[in-house]
Each structure stands twice: as C-alpha cells, then as structure tokens.
Image 1 (spheres, rainbow, N blue to C red):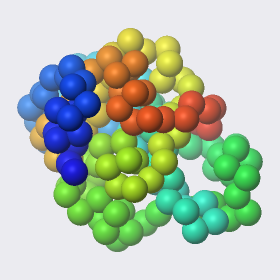
Image 2: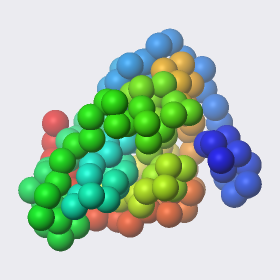
Image 3: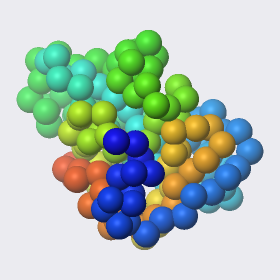
Image 4: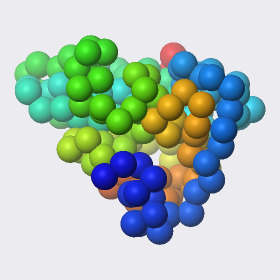
Length: 152
C-alpha cells in the first residue's frame, strides 16, 4: 500500500501540495513557506537489527544516545541511502513519508511535534507534500510519542 492509498483508506483529511524541488526537509519548509518545526522529516535507524522510523521536525536532529536508551538497544545506527532505497522503493531518495507502517516499521514521533496543530511532510517525491493536522498524522502513523531529538 502506498501513502495515498493509506490516506484514503483511513479517511484522513489532507491536502496535497505541489512545490518547487525540495531535496531536504528544511528546503521543503522554505518551499511551503512554513517554519521548519512544522515539517516532519523521517530518519530511519536500525536498533539491534530492527528498522525503526523516527519522525521529527526538520529543525531538529536525532539524539542517538537518548534514542538508544529509549529503545533499549545495544547497537543503534542510521541506515544508509542504499538501505533506505531498498526499504522505501516507492519513494524518491530523501522524500520518504515519515510513516513507518508503510514500510513495515514502527514509528517514533518526537514529542516536540506535539506543539504543532498542522504538519507537512514529503509525499514520496521532491515535488509533493502532504499537509494535515498533527492529530491526524499521529493517528495515521500509529506513532509512539517519545523525546529523542535536540535542536539542529
């Protein structure tokens, strides 16, 4: 199932925005004329052999030490681009939706996102983005809320 099919199946209200090419989450914020903390970026990690999708604001970064502790992992690493391309074959590299269930992963949502009423994220390409309420995103992603980021 792809992102649009999931949105329709779950009957989640959203808008699909076309924008100039945005190769990073911060570039998406610029293209959409929103602050970086409203854009959710995906970061995929491998924790003791298990892939986990981390969803956090574009203007923050994963605190690997904190995340390792939260996950109770002995080993934690960021996946590389080749692995990401294999995990998310329906997306342009770097434009993955931050919804792990699309790719067979659990999703962790950084609690800093709770400050936002509305969020935006890439929709699988560098030219499209989904805009929806944060509550709907949280429900769609079936995310566990934890604090694992720090300012970028």
